Amino acid sequence: MPYDGPMDDDEEGPRLPPGTPNYMTPAGHARLRAEQQQLARVERPAVVEIVSWAAGNGDRSENGDYLYGKKRLREIDRRLRFLGKRLEIAEVVDPSAQTNRQQVFFGATVTYVNGRDEERTITILGIDEADITRGEVSLHSPIALALLRKRLGDAVPMRTPAGMDELEIVAITYPSVADGTG
Image (cartoon, rainbow, N blue to C red; front, side):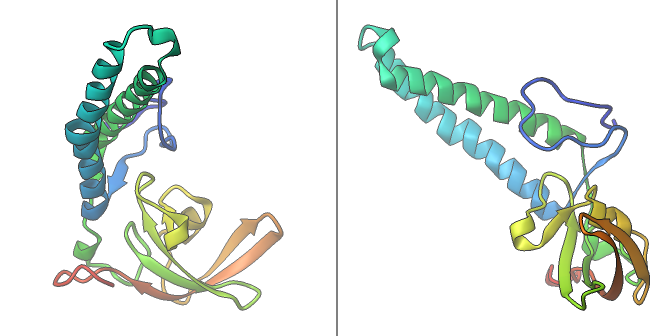
């Protein structure tokens, strides 16, 4: 079922554009599933135990362990709801299975040179797994949208805060089937 708008008031992460699939790599899906299990099986039971102990200590209005524990439980439950909804609508796509490796699609690692002759490399991933500090961008980011479906050697116009720029694609790689690397 495609995503049709905001999830609810306690949404934890970036919003998906309306009507778009929630693409995710197998590794990204596994990371979110592991986080969900860690929260549900380890962290939440530990916090419940602390809250129960603190509740037995009397006046709850001034009991820091109780107040913090209740707050942390709300945070955990909100994150668990978010993860459950995102995993439920996830469409897992394995970039190593991409047969058209001459074009930029989901999961591609793209190296480009901008108009200032600066070379950059990015990997296009799902909205819930992209991390710019690792050179990963969301499939829905402006740079990814500009590069999608382009080919090696293409010059791609890109609007930036500094004005128009032109990006030349110099490499497109996908993880290999055998080892999961590019």
